[in-house]
Amino acid sequence: MAYGNALAALADPTRRAVFERLRTGPRSVKTIAHGMPVSRPAVSQHLKVLKEAGLVADRPEGNRRVYYIDPEGLGALRGWLDQFWDAALAAFQAEVEKSADEQKESK
Image 1 (spheres, rainbow, N blue to C red):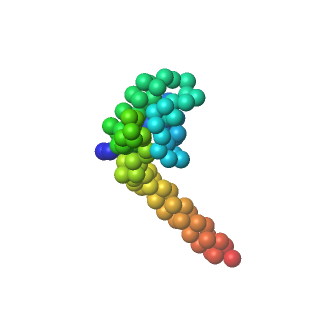
Image 2: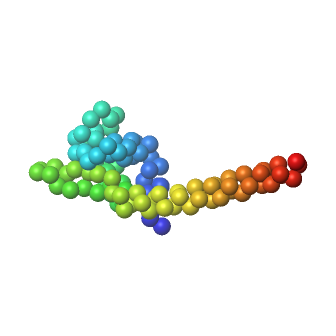
């Protein structure tokens, strides 16, 4: 249940803000923390939780770590969410077809 860990990690608003800062590409902890109302060590702790949930990964660049969204972990979360979207689309299609049939019958 990889998506469960991802949902739990993203439940925290500060953690979501950290995650969202990676949307445009890899960033160092310093860059992520810039302008946030929490310290760099706090951002590092949030990144640790996101990494454990499989949502972010990191790589060394010189003497710092650069974090980026892990497409594999995000894919697991998206797969879970897509099942709801598929069901919603199927229900919508059934309703449209039902309305179309009712219109034909009333003519």
